[in-house]
Length: 442
Image 1 (cartoon, rainbow, N blue to C red):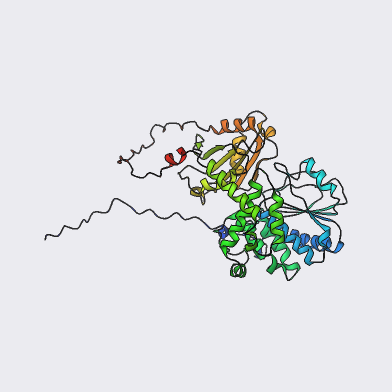
Image 2: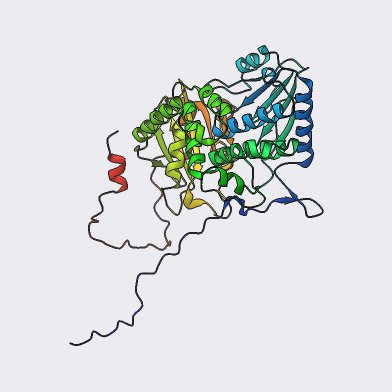
């Protein structure tokens, strides 16, 4: 048998290198003049918050906790609750206020509702911040704001501890845990899993707990990652439903002593099933792209808050050399308004300069020559550089899409630019293509 001559020519196929995506904690933290790491927030602000909590617990006065509706906010709220009771506060003196659907702590309706509960102390957690009057009108009420959303402006007369300028930016649950942990020896054991759940809720369940994040090995020895992550999914479900019964998640979390206890809660399970079904129904919407190819826009109409879930999902799948941001707009969540969520596309992470969603959205809005920015209001481009969005009237949203030139074809290549001829290939046997996927019936 004759042997075939060895082919000495290089294979035309070059193995593609796996894309390198930096870990969340790889960023360089801030340091003081002596080289010590400044994290998770200003040391002065952290100590101010600790003194506030000590004073609050010792006073025995009515205290109102105002956590955000998601896993991060709720976990942070329960950490505060347990810290106050560990420091001697009576359970009967602690109340919770949950913001209504589509509202914020700055709305007059919510300010009045908080004030009506006659608190002496108000602790606002993970609500995002902007310039505003005092949290309530009663100037004798002492307010503390714990947050990590990007902002340099806050309600008047409040004490503030914010993680937004101290990378890697801690979630509100993690910031709260770091504030509260030294206040009582039981906090680490009773609240460690709450810290992890809240952090995974915001940063994802593949997060690597590298320094300066705390060592949470003991938490993962006691509670499995599957139980933690499943509990996060359940806690996030009620606030996404059209019923918006965040109180179900708060009550379940407050009464549980481990993630495992949350996994059998009937209401949370039914809420998650409802949301999973709605996500599947809405997620097959085909995207349109901005003229420059940097923004992919998905448009849905749902009474459920599924737009952030769909944005996160597609941010992990869509790929192109130009794509930076995935935007999912929901015209069915609030009457007359468009709620939209933006996420950085996975393929765009690690780019230099880094993608900043807030700056990108504001840059588009600034193309307008009228008063669009003013008409969109304070709920436009809020949140984080990596995860932002807004709630704006339908007309203003259409103007924003027009400025992005969504759906317009890109300009032909300029003359002199090198053209690359596409390789002709046979018909792909693959059936699970994007076109087939988007074409599926809901």
